[in-house]
Image 1: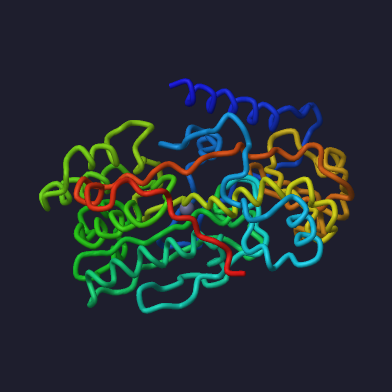
Image 2: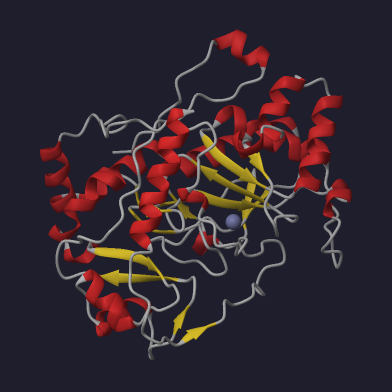
Amino acid sequence: MIRSFILILTSFLYATAWAGEPTSQPVAVEAEEEADDHDEDEAEPANGIDPELEAIPGANVPLDDTIRYTTDLTDQDLDKRFCGDLASLGSISVGFAESGRMIGAVKMSQDPAWTLVVPEYAWGTQETVDYLSAAARLVKAQFPDSVPLRVNHIGKKDGGYVRPHRSHQSGRDVDLGFFYKNDVGPGGLPRAREKLIDPARNWALIRAIVTQTDVQVILTDRRIQNVLYEHALAQGEDKEWLDSLFHAGTASLVQHARRHRDHFHVRFFSPRSQELGRRVQPLLAKRPDENKVSHRVRSGDTLGRIARKYGSSVRMIQRANGMRGTFLKLGHSLTVPMRGPCTQCPLPPPFIVPARRLPPELKTAVGTPEPTLTTASH
Ligand SMILES: [Zn+2]
């Protein structure tokens, strides 16, 4: 209780730090674009809530920033490798899912267990790629004749804004298509997909993600959730466990989100990549090529104002984002190259990956395991 209060308080402080800019100057702002280039995956809910700054279901927020997941690296090692051998650090998740970026992202490979719908947007943290691969392979092992899982956007090679999403910026989010009954897709029926989905394989996917990975949250429409819950219950899954996944309010692992009636949005914890992201932030200025921050445009922003805030220039921002003019799109993120150390860059709070929520039979079989930590491949 106290911890969640602290989390909320911390979140508020971070949110306030973000919002602390004056907004008096007029700004050229275009309306948020509608998602029109995806058949399956729509925009994140534009409700102004930043899930990254909200309470993390089940997460433990430590009162200190002790190094937990990168203890193999002293500060000196990190400094040396960041400056001289960046690739050896593996993937680094910088900033927040809704305004962040990636260093050393890993690309999801091709595999019979899944299809990459947009291969150029299949870059994530090492943890995301490993977790997703493990979950998809488990489903494939249970349903060998199934069509592959549709892996839609994860993120771009350097992270940052991916149209049409608000998140997907720091390598921890992925959109997954549903499995449909008899593999017949919804065609022109965008709405009642809960009637068309194959409960067995979709539940197998959710079960695999929950039991095999360190997942932070799964977003999908409540009507989809109901089908999966009823199926799982009928299959003899433990009700208490199911309720902790679906019916535990803000502590549920599976959460309802608007415009998520046609896909699962999964956010994984990436303990090592996220902790590295926190630790490298003060080092960014040592590498001009990596000295960038992601800034989400809000009402009142101008290019000049953003440039001043971060010690950048209008020209540098334009070049980094392929912009010709000065139009800013509300809610979108800009990559802002900086000339010196960033004193205005918000740092995500430290966290401890919660124990996995396992069904009783797995719990008694292996005890409550420590979260598996993926280490960089170097
Ligand atoms: Zn998504």
